[in-house]
Amino acid sequence: MLKRLWGIKLTRFAAVGVFNTLFDISMLNTFVFVFHIPYVAANLISASISMSASYFLNHHIVFRHKEEHSVAKFAHFFAVTGIGILGIQSLMIYAVTHLLQPHHSTIASLIRTLHIFSHLGVRGFELNVAKICAVLAAMVWNFTIYHFVIFKQPDDMIEGDIVL
Image 1 (cartoon, rainbow, N blue to C red):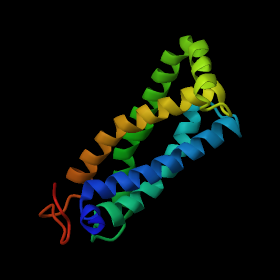
Image 2: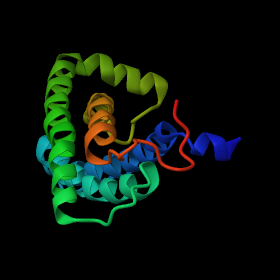
Image 3: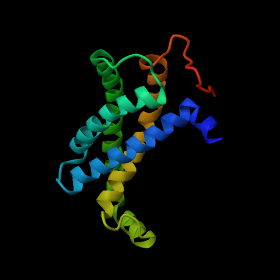
Image 4: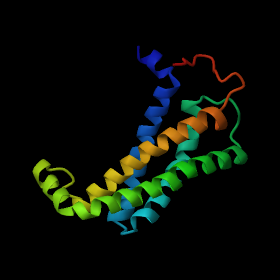
């Protein structure tokens, strides 16, 4: 059953996406809370690093692309992903954190009651909620463009790939 599930491209995309998102969020939190880099700048750095990892993971694991790596394909991937991650995510992080700011006292109360994010506080909660919203918005954009443009196969089907 797991082999069949792993044969579905969308399952592989989700697995790589979860890994890459956790990697990205870990770096983002480190840049913000350890190195004190502002939210949007920290997101640009962490997203750029995770996009590079994402290219190789998507190339080999998700789309099982047969062509060799190329600077041109990487640049195309980086440009498309850049719109999703650097553009969409940065706008979402900015918007969500600003929308949450007037509610700091409510968020602080929620954190105390639920015992979540107590080590990061309101800023940590705000940043991570914003990042999760941003990832979800960019995910739809990324998969669509990867599937139909970046890693498009001549017949859009690879041997052993199960289509939904």
